[in-house]
Image (tube, rainbow, N blue to C red; front, side, top):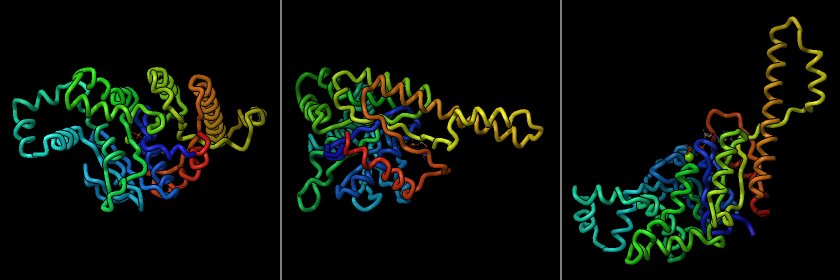
Length: 312
Ligand SMILES: Nc1ncnc2c1ncn2[C@@H]1O[C@H](COP(=O)(O)OP(=O)(O)OP(=O)(O)O)[C@@H](O)[C@H]1O
Ligand SMILES: [Mg+2]
């Protein structure tokens, strides 16, 4: 069984570590396996269409590549979607929820924004149908907010249930929660960089996951630099012979290799620390020396990640 055989994969991690990139890579792998997948960007982010050179349609799905769609969820549209589904009359929604008296109240309910975004994820995974009446997507990949907010978002349906205790909001959130907290249907991936802060945040997140810990399937250690062909012990010898030369260019080259060796040690430390604390499969994704990643780069990263997904 592949990790992608689950219905929903939530990808989180510290800001800027490569969550969106990993979502795209997972999406490409899913389509290679013949699945139809959608990546939901959250909180109004619209990064993926830009990478694939297509125009974002916001809340409406748009195709990134054959079999792979994306949409961008905003809390406001998700609330509207939810309420209109409940009361079936858009005009009534506009009248009741978007007037000056109600709007601040709706915006102020703690957890509501996050809960309705997951409601949309649930909708894509459970309810959405294609024109033939079949499930529209086999897999929903959630590009979740960064660690702290990502965790609050995951806890939001439960918070809303505690807040409401009964009624349609309770029932709606209970449905979402039952799917999102079920390890058979929903799995989590944390993306991390081989640096101290992201590693510390990753470990903290995994500790704070509580019972959701059993849904955590994989940690992707992204932007790993390739090892130099000279092993550290040989470099120590070569370095002694090279230092103190009268050539500034040679000194600079020595400095560069030193930095490279330091990076290797940092990567090694990060991998060991994560492995010890998470007790989870940790997999590397290489750093690609590009100013901007293209779909072809994502396909390369997909080649690396594919075998790992069947092993977790
Ligand atoms: N393996 C990689 N090699 C080279 N560049 C990468 C790699 N992974 C990600 N990047 C680049 O790093 C930057 C951040 O990646 P990305 O947008 O995926 O991170 P993020 O975690 O989604 O960020 P945010 O928290 O802002 O949403 C992007 O410019 C992306 O192209
Ligand atoms: Mg992102």
